[in-house]
Image: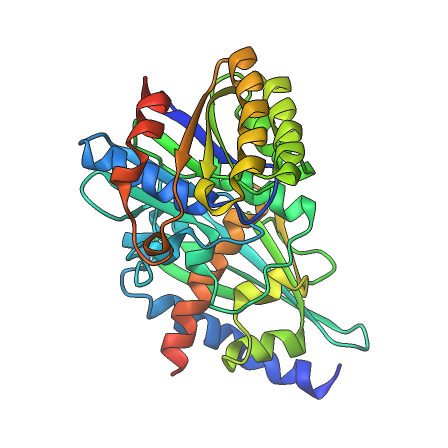
Length: 229
Length: 132
């Protein structure tokens, strides 16, 4: 993967907004004129392509490497979802999932300066495979929500990332204003203890229903600055 | 050998039809010339039939081979004849057969199995376009 900088967008549990965060980080970087590659590695729910106009693209190859799909002047994409007919159950066992991750990381001709990776959720075997591949050379963004279950799950993923020497740059607290204020405050206080200890930044992204249907890269300026800086 | 497997005597012509009608196949997949495949089909009685698919120069070649002693190929794919027929009829997407664990793909050239699966899926997409 030459000198590309991998940025894992991960979380302790599903449904926190990893895909939304991944796409918006990628688009924000692209709008800054930075060459960016976007990889949908969430093989449990490969949905990243739904926000991108890539459905008519065909697979191409050059020199035993797959060519990523061009999305814009500075953005390219690859993911399993775009090649699977809508509605087909993606029932991959660990062996097949790990094999796909190898293909997507090592056998795609990525040309970006940053590789934004929409990772599978939770501290599971597939993430161990992914983190091993990226050991010591990736940055990470954890996406969570401010409630007690999420903090337990995110502490597990934080431990796994640290074990594989992946530098956590930011914790995105997504939809933070949806939760009961006092409860959210307590959770954020605890996150801040870990943020101080491990040197990552907490970035709050408010609930915005438009994010379900369109990208708003400008909302992710703070995350991008932490990731790139 | 079952009638269904006997019917597959048309298979080499069918597969080569797809390869010849790819048009821009070698432009999109220039490495195709360096690859070869064993396609192995079996029925519920244990009968098997196998084909070697590859190129000699720019010329696509499909030939029946001994399923017990197939020649070297960069990839091998095995599936039940009913699955193959469903794929050819467009009743089941080739990728779905892999995701549902209905086919086996073996890589002999060091590339990941999933890489070969994506190449095979591109092949079947084009073959189905020809059959339409």
